[in-house]
Structures are given as structure tokens and as C-alpha cells.
Image 1 (cartoon, rainbow, N blue to C red):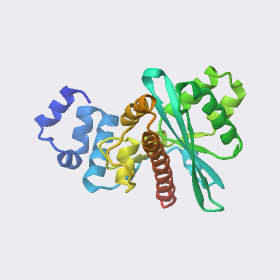
Image 2 (cartoon, one colour):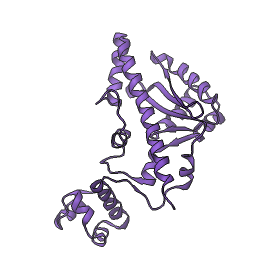
Image 3 (cartoon, rainbow, N blue to C red):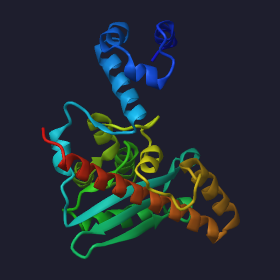
Image 4 (cartoon, one colour):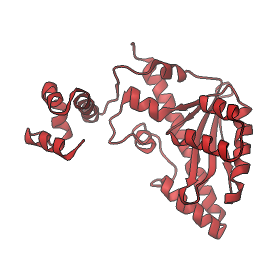
Length: 252
């Protein structure tokens, strides 16, 4: 929202989330436009009441994708942007029959190993070719396309893999209003009660850690990166399970 629109809201006494939630809807929509006004008020209402709200028209195709499968894969990447390197392709495999979840990290201990871990990742996910691959952002899809192109993976194989991806971030922003300030995985996970084992760690911290690993060879650094990546995969799993339960209780 532009500063001028913020100013307009302040002019009529709307200076807090609570006052926005309680304001006259017609007035807000007249000032900001129907779509933006409705969106901001619903977000404010969700935050004030600490309660998620289903959006009016969730994407039913995405709702169907939440149905449990025998095997599900949860995928997260750690990258080093300055090197244009994706050095960790992490996957948590959930087996609903055996009620197990297992972390599979495909790690390039040197930048030159990126192609090797890409092939290892492909072999793994293709061995569970009926399993959906849940992730949280466009980055995973873009990376699969980049690595496939870079390492000469046949186009049909890349497309088959891309078609198995289910982006929970896209699902959330089109289907649910959460009582959070932003829709990052960390914000959503924290609200849902998921705890990362290393508090305060971020993807940016992992970039620094990987550079330190390349310099020092200290394996404790690698263990910290792996732990963070696994927790991101598990947070994605936690979010998916919550969404499945949340929408199972709603009649459309």
C-alpha cells in the first residue's frame, strides 16, 4: 500500500490494526478500492482475533492436492547466491503406511559436486514417482529447471518432476488468511507452533555457514546447515498437515 493511502487511513483515525478491523467496510473500500480494502480488513480481522480465515474462493484443485498419499516428499533447498550454487537439496520422505519420516540430504561438500547431488536427487525422487513433492516458494521449481538445463537432464524428465511440485506458499496466499505479519515459512511455522531446533537461524545464516565450511572444513558447520534444512522440510510438512485438517472442517 502506498504512503498516500496510509495517510488517508490516518486522516480518518485508522492508525492501528484494531481500528482497521473495526472500521466501516464501505468507507475502507471506497478509499482503497474494493479488492485491496477487503484484503486489508480481512488480514486485520484475522490478526486481531488471532484466527485464520478461509478465503472466499479457494482453489479446489489445490485443495485436492492436500489429500494424503502413501508416500509424500517435502523439499527444501539451501543455496549460495554469489556462487550461483544450490549446494543442498533436502527431502523429508513421509511414509504413511509405516508412519515414518526420514530426512535425505543431498549435499555438495564442494561447489564442484552440485551436478553429482542433482543426479542423486533425481534418482531418489524418481524412485518414488507417484509421490507429490511439497515445497514452499517458487525457488524450488525454478531451481529444478535451472539444474535440469545446466546438467543436460532430458526436458520430459524435468517437466514430469515440475508437475509433481505442490507449492504450499501459493496455496496459502490464495486460500487462507493467517494472523501473521508476513507469509514466510518461518512466520507461519511459528504461529502454528512449529519450533526450529536452532532459534534465530535463517537461510542467510546458512549462506555464511557454507562459506565458512569451505574455508575451515569444520563438520559441525555442515551439521548445523543440515539441521536447519531438515527443520524447513519438517515445517513444510507441519503446514501441509494443518492445512489438510483446517479445510477438512469447512463446507464450501
